[in-house]
Amino acid sequence: MDWLYVVGIVVFLLGLMFSIALHEIGHLVPAKIFGVRVTQYMVGFGPTAWSRRKGETEYGIKWIPFGGYVRMIGMLPPRPGDDTTKLRSNATGPFQGLIETVRDAAQEDVLPGDDDRVFYRKKWWQKVIIMSGGPLMNFVLAFVFSAILLVGIGLPAEAPIVAPTTETCVIPVSEQRAACKPGDQPTPAAQAGLKPGDHMVSFDGATIGSWEDAKRLIRSHGPGPVKLGIVRDGKPMTFDVTLIAQDRPNLDDPEKTDKNVGFLGVRPTEVMEQQSVGQVIGYMGGLTARVAGSIFNLPEKMVGVWHAAFSGEERDPEGPVGAVGAGRMGGEILASDLSNEEKIATLVSLLAGFNLAMGMFNLIPLLPLDGGHVAGGLWEGLKRAYAKVMRRPEPKYVDIAKVLPLTYAMALVMMVMTGLLVYADLVNPLTLTR
Image 1 (cartoon, rainbow, N blue to C red):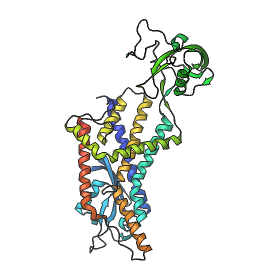
Image 2: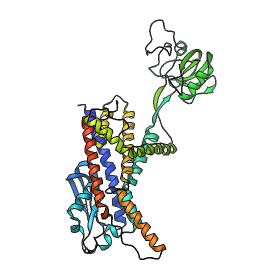
Image 3: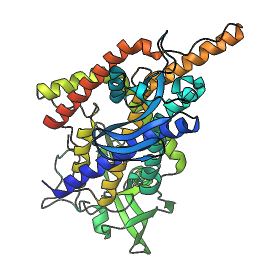
Image 4: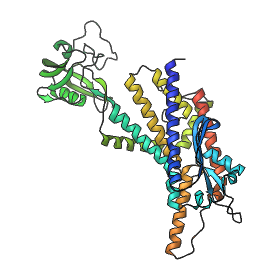
């Protein structure tokens, strides 16, 4: 196995753990600010690899790096008739929370004097802030990773620089070949002496600012002589070039052909073009729409994953991928023939998409997801506001434990989906070459 492949997997998993750690910090910090007693902050699941207690909280890392949780006392109010000093508890980690609820072990965490430090007694808006803090942190990370990608690294773009792959002969569009053969007519660019690396900056006095400018000017000019301004090795130069007429694929619809347009005979060079901060917002908008669509169509997409896992069908490139599959993609990225800059950009893009998906998925208003607790807090706020307006007695705290049957069903679905994705990512992974 290529060592770069292994490094890519490790790098992605470290990025995933970093994202999970900050997600849980998004819960931890507001919980402590609002006075909730937090007994554990853990990144990962399973046996504890390392932990250290600081004050009243145990901080640690577990061996399975695919999740995390913050354990707060008193997530659920007492059952009617229960001793109010004995509280049920849950955690921000969905699976960990279910285990703790079933075992009813949280009563041991409540100490004398903790009445005002339990989660369920906090104001509704404080509950909403605490539980939405994790997904919000993922959104911030998605924006930061996207900004690093667009502003710091850039997006692939075609620049008006003669590429090394530029053919030196005229190949008619009707001929399905990419190599020159004896007897082919030299291109106007080759006849004029253009070389790979020449940066085209002007066309008959018109400025060329992009490859789109160059294509538009060349095609619209038609056959005939022009003065082409270039920069070669830092020195400005001007070439007299005679364009010829050629049939070329339409720029908007490659299935169509434009007849007798101007032809120079150069290919652009792909570069990483840095974007503005404002463009990050537009990029995030498009990414959010795609992720939201994927989540909405998740049940249908999981059927495709099932067929890919057990029937050998090809994985849908737009379908879901788990942490295992994404880790494999990280390895594939580093082991690929991409430039170092392109490898970093692809990994950063992958982490941005994962954080956005993690944040949006967690806001689905169903337990045991964060969105279920947020929905409970909002419902409590509405009930209290209605009671205040109608001058009715203050209602009791919303008891989200009443929907535990739905919680168990949702948790089972999530475990099945996770297991299916892990299996599919192992036996029929989604790769960058598909």
